[in-house]
Length: 258
Ligand SMILES: Nc1ncnc2c1ncn2[C@@H]1O[C@H](COP(=O)(O)OP(=O)(O)OP(=O)(O)O)[C@@H](O)[C@H]1O
Ligand SMILES: [Mg+2]
Image (cartoon, rainbow, N blue to C red; front, side, top):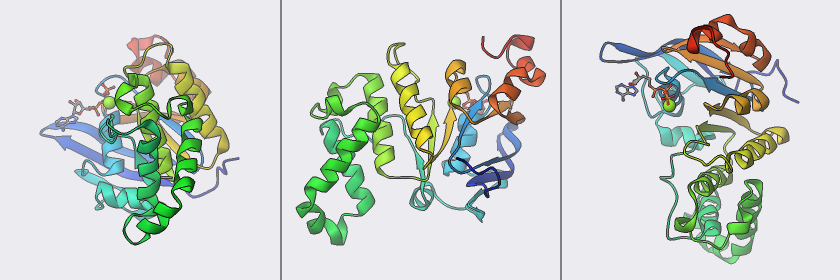
């Protein structure tokens, strides 16, 4: 089980970013316990993706800092953060369309192990990287499509492949920005089940941005709510569900589930 007294894996101090005169993220202090799943919710334009981008290094904050395992990483590039064990899924930009599904994941396994000096050793041990890639595909329920080229996949399957590629890189913390965006209704339950499985193993930390409230409520250990760049609530799902501030933020007093 997650140890609530463990030091946070990632935290922010007074994290702020301005675009021109507009404060997109405003003084956010947050922390995430290792081996838990936290979701970020909030109305459109609340600053969720911008906040993510500052954690993963795509955006530099105007003010404040980001700490990974207690170390200030505010000045590090996205690539340096990836090396430390922070993994972010990009909207389908890291998939090679001409390769098969299995090959795409194998490339990720190999890149984690390093080409360079070890290339020939890896080449001779080809089957081990292939076995690992296949096992990762099973984790995301995509093993049935291992032979297909990724160009042949549906949008939802591509998102699963993207998550498999991310898992193959074995990050300690996974950042997922709307993994179900653009998916058909039928594809969403598999993603939910997959995330539930990843979470239950409790060997990774997940930070998720999602709009699907049922999914958020059932999956999350904790939920943080952004509104106009400010953190207005952070707590367990039940607490968030009952929070008046959160209900105000959504639909001026309507329920969060609407
Ligand atoms: N590069 C940028 N330049 C200028 N403004 C930006 C930039 N990136 C984000 N913003 C602004 O910051 C605010 C927060 O946007 P952000 O994309 O983080 O919201 P979000 O919560 O992810 O919304 P959604 O739910 O629609 O994805 C918006 O007003 C947006 O226009
Ligand atoms: Mg967004």
